[in-house]
Image 1: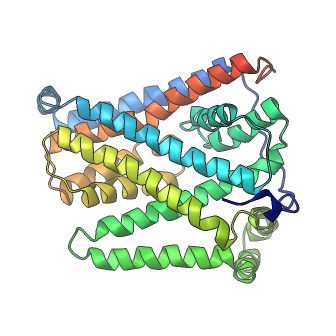
Image 2: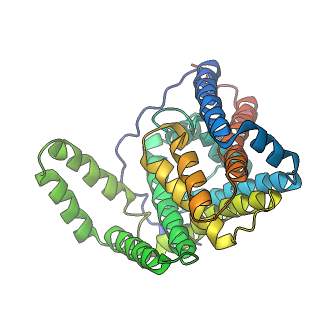
Image 3: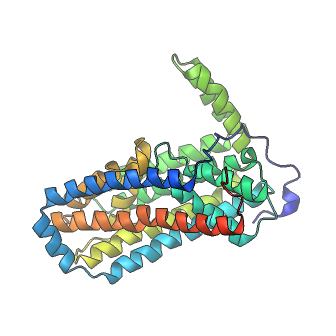
Length: 341
């Protein structure tokens, strides 16, 4: 871990974080419920496509203890990513926050993980400001650093999982090159600034976007030094592997013989696809990719593939939303002025 003496100055001032709406919990709940209703419609379509009778039959023989195990693995993901959050707070010399409050603040970000715009991560900075007066601009770089290391971790799992399939070594090599390239770009200020200059030179919105990219990189520089990337990246990889294991254990509950590497490839690839498409929570995209991969590469039965996809999404995405609301409720009891506007 980084010792206090290693950080003589706080991280360079970050650009002002996007203002997260100080909406009431009632308004936030309405947004989440709207997305949940949309999810119900999407999942119903998947169920009809797979055959309601076949899906019901698969669920009737499902070992439900594996769903409980999947919930535990998903929560393990949150714990490991919280350690990364704590690490970044220490790197930025943000201190004086009780561990329990910090944990609840981290979990509260899951409340808005399914709303349009995916502002849940910025929401953590707002909560930290209202509970412990940490300027949002000070903690905002953590949000981007978290997503960056998550991206590297997920790509690493895709590369590892792809070795299970024919031709997978090519994908593994491509993934390894991509991860290595990201690390080189992140670690090199010269390369990063050159890429920003290229963006600025491009026609269209490049000139408007480039200054923001330049400011963001300067703000992130303290968090993206090579010595500060290793531990968070390892934590991210381990955390997302736990959710890959959640899919594997659920497939086991459906009596499907998927390998751990295969399940890792299915889950990590669909998670990345859902993150790249700008829809709330990757809704529809993640599910389609996950089910297709299980059917075509894993030879999982149609009903079992749909059931496993539905249950792992409940165990990860929707469980996270519930955990986020619970954490936010506890924080509001501890800090009555939180989101009082």
